[in-house]
Length: 263
Image (tube, rainbow, N blue to C red):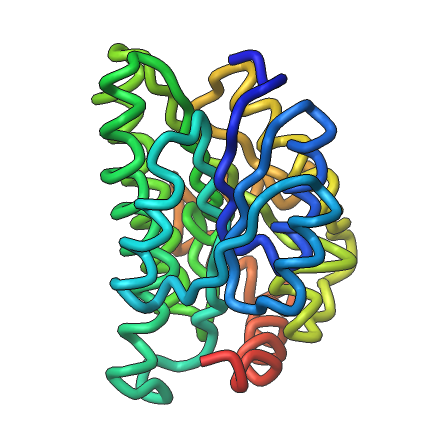
């Protein structure tokens, strides 16, 4: 898809990854429609990019419907919003579980359903679902997060099989550890030796590549992390054992502690 002149909805636009994605899409000539919870960040960003802001909390089904109505005719949907979901499951209340599921899994599925209907009618459009390498490889103390990202990745690949022949591309972008911004930085995680994080700009470039080249899936990580995620699909218990050897448990517990206030 040629991006110049296309309208695009970016969810989670107030976070570091969302801002990088929105700026890169504007640089590609898109007209951005941005949504996020923090209006004090969202509205100046929309002004800067010549777009429109829709403050919303995507854990609220009414807000998801409102965003879908406002963005019904966009050419591209980038579902980037997400909550950490780190920590032992027994440490979550049912309400907190519902919130993580609502933002990470329900909202992108509902937005794809409602906005994708118009795309299918036109016979063109593109949907990018920002998942994670945690949708390929499990990590300790992250069962809820893994559940949402495995689910989102599976949804993306299956939806692509249904809609790509009808003119609507569907892509899944899977970031690994990201420096400068994003959940890993926000949680105060320290990477094991030998792992090199990527940047928000790398994620934004992958989103653009996914749309322009109509790619099914793009991983954003160094070679070591990509290789581990690929191996995890074939031998998950072996990779889990290797992860413990290099300190994955320690990193996971760091992130769980750092994200407690985001439930």
